[in-house]
Length: 235
Image 1 (cartoon, rainbow, N blue to C red):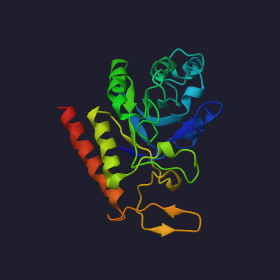
Image 2 (tube, rainbow, N blue to C red):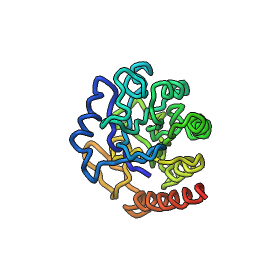
Image 3 (tube, rainbow, N blue to C red):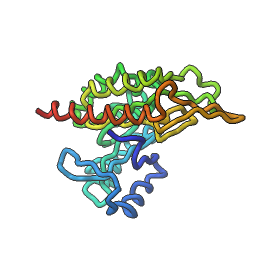
C-alpha cells in the first residue's frame, strides 16, 4: 500500500523529469522500485494527466519497438497512467503503459474513481497483463479553493468512507493500493494527526470525537489487513 503518489510526474513536454530523476536519485536506497512481471526491480512512476498526450506519442517511448523506446535501457521503469474515462483503458494499453491508477479520492467523480467500476477495470487489466492500482482517500472537500465544487464533496463519516473505499479496493485483489492524500488539507484528504483549529480564513477539519491519529491508525490496520489478504490470494 502506498501513501500519496511516489515519483509522480506529468506528461510531455515534462517527460525529461522521470529520466533526470532516475539519473540523479536512482541509486539511492529510498528511491521506490517495484519488481515487474519479468522479475526486474524498476522505478515506479505515476503519470498524471497522461491522457492529454496521444497513445501514439506515448508508444514511441513505452513500447519495445518504439522509435525512442526507453524499454530495456537505464531509464526503463514501471509507468502507470491515469484512468479517467472508460475509453482510456484501451488508450493506455496501446500506449505501452504498465498499468493504470484512478487518483481521485471522490467516489463517482470519474469513471476510474467510481468503486463500482473497479472490478471491470481489473478484469481488463488482468486480460492484458496490466497493473490496476485503485486509489482511495479518507474523504474529499475542496470548496475552500474551489467554491463551485460542492457536488464532489465526500463526507468522511467518522472513517467509514475511508474504510469503504479500502474494502472496495481489496475486493478486486490489486497488487498495490494508492492513498491519494499527501496531507492536502485544502482538499480535505489529509490523514495526519488533526486537532480542532480555526483561523480568520479557514476552519480546519478534525476527527472528533475520535483521537487525532484516527486515520493513521485506520491506515495501519488496513495495510496489515492488505498484506494478510495478499498472502491468501497467492496460496
